[in-house]
Image 1 (spheres, rainbow, N blue to C red):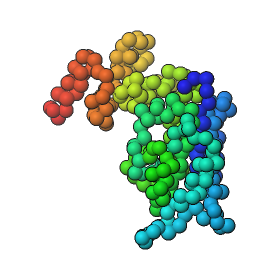
Image 2: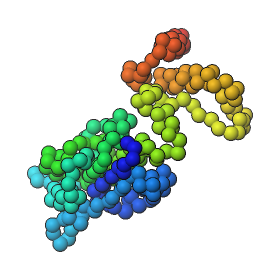
Image 3: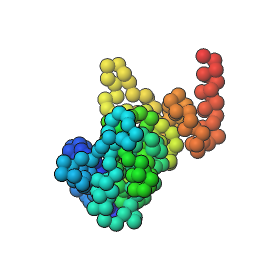
Length: 252
């Protein structure tokens, strides 16, 4: 992930949607540092008719419009060789995107994201033109543009040099290094409207602070995402603390 530029090609019917998100915050800085290269392709430019129609009525009848295969194929062909690229279709039917998938993508040199839209997309795109189908959750959006933005953001921040603090990403929730939700964070002031920062964080005892953070991460994961504990690397001390939480829950 070091010393190279990760290229994202995004194929969309609505290229204007990407102007602001990719020209702000960390993504803007990453582009300026040449850590990521984001290129937007308008699928409609490769429509074959004079009206630039990229969708049509579905064979067999039904509601809505279906994205045509020809413009998508033409847009992909225009990208040149995709031998080293991972070509993904953003669709609610895809594999759910998670931190591990983001890590896998961060190891690539080129990622192509095809944004679906309307009622659906010609099945021949799935069968012949993409390697992976990706979803950001079990819900339906108007199109794949917002999910594509999320993928670019999540993958980019894992690249060396994108974050100001290189130790930030490994401590994130869902990070493979942690395997737990992130512990609570605080900053100044130490008290606001009577709401105080935990005394341990002001103590300067780093070992005790780390122990507190570990317990809080375990507690938060236990309360919110117990499924994650099945895969987390837990010490004997961690398991003892979780047994205490289970005991407390049983007495309530």
